Image (tube, rainbow, N blue to C red; front, top):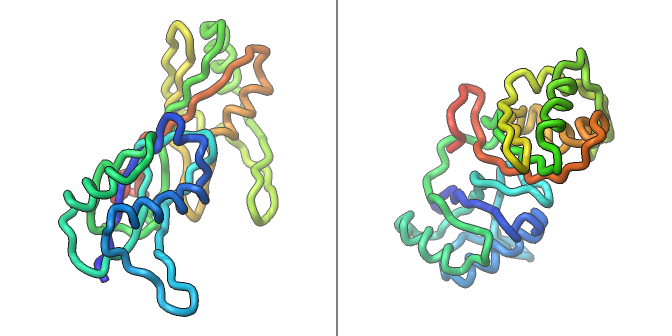
Amino acid sequence: MIPIRIFFTKTGVARYISHLDVNRMMQRALKRAELPVWYTEGFNPHMYLTFALPLSLGQESLCESMDLRLNEPVPPEEVQCRLQAALPDGFSVTGVFPPQEKYAAIAAAVYRCELYTEQPETLAADWERFAALPEILTEKKTKRGSSTVDLRPLLSDVKREQGEEALTLTVRLPAGSVSNINPSLILEAFAAHTDQVFYSRILRTGVFTSDGKPFR
């Protein structure tokens, strides 16, 4: 068995496809690509696919990754070409490599959040006041229950760009098995501190290990 890691983007209309459906879609695409994917053994053989940091519904990403195994060697360029031809709109394979790190090495992710509003200048001023609060407590829900987290320490390095139609925030957040913060938590908390109505586009632009290197 030959382990490989496939990197791909998920943008546009694909942001409305859930993680479970992405898994199913990838299995169908791999079959259409006629790649020699390894199947589990037993009464119910199936492709063994694993994904790093499943993306929330409605969010986009330039750095998704999926691990699988092949029964025989196939050049990475051929894997990329054959799989890309079988994928629907919104998905693009950006690279195929042997895995270098385990998923446990993931420590952070960077997101670009575009907040569209009729008054971006006012929204930017509200953001400055919001980011200056001494603490920003919010409830974080998980499968194990809920807990209260303070988002304020995460806003110290946020980069802000003000355009004619949107306020753009670039934020680096904890990610992975130890700690994981969804950027939607920050935007929901901000929405409660401003009278401005905005809608957002969230794009994950990078995934990194604890030493700051891109996850590979």
